Structure formats: C-alpha cells, structure tokens
Length: 113
Image (cartoon, rainbow, N blue to C red; front, side, top):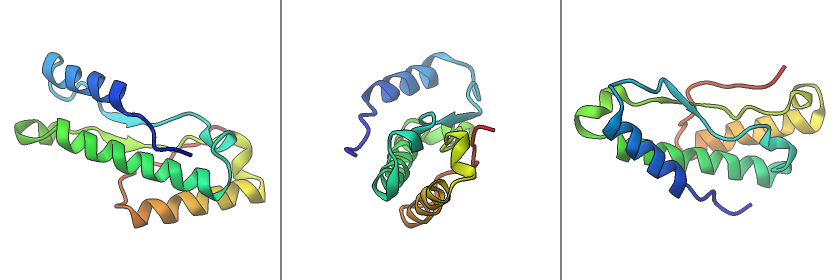
C-alpha cells in the first residue's frame, strides 16, 4: 500500500481556491470502497495515512484568509458488506485507530448502505 500520489488532487484544489468563489467545496472524500482493495490492517492504515496527507494538503492550500473556508474531510466510504462482516469491522477499527494516531483529520464517517 504505497502512499497515494496527491499531485492531481493538489492541482485541482489549488485551481479551486484560485478560481472559485469562497466555500465552493463543503467537503472532500478520499476514495470509494477502498476496503475492497486496500483490505486488511495494512490497507486500513494506508487509507488513514492518505487522509492525513490530504489534510496537510488542504491546510496548505486553504491557508491565510482562505482558512475559514477550508472544506472538511469525510470518509472512508467503505463497501457496504464491511459493516456486517468481522473482517470489515476490523478494517474500521484499524482505520479509526490509525486516524486518531496520525492526527484525527476525518470529520465525517461514511459507508455505502
């Protein structure tokens, strides 16, 4: 699980701050059903680390006067089966534990139902 390359996200976010009206983004979500491919504890930790990297990027891009308009981070938007399977619950626990350890950057928790 290598760190996510955020270069495209960075370009999009910098363009958004420079070209769009204030508060044009309410929130950002990272990934979709990644517990299906980034499964296990390593995948959950990698996803939490990716959220921390995105949070650092958001803090950098929305600095100075723009900081008040900073979007929130929501996720991890897991596959629906994860809520009902022991391995899915372990994935959640690992993601949450790692998220808290690297800075608690996720403001909203999402999953598919």
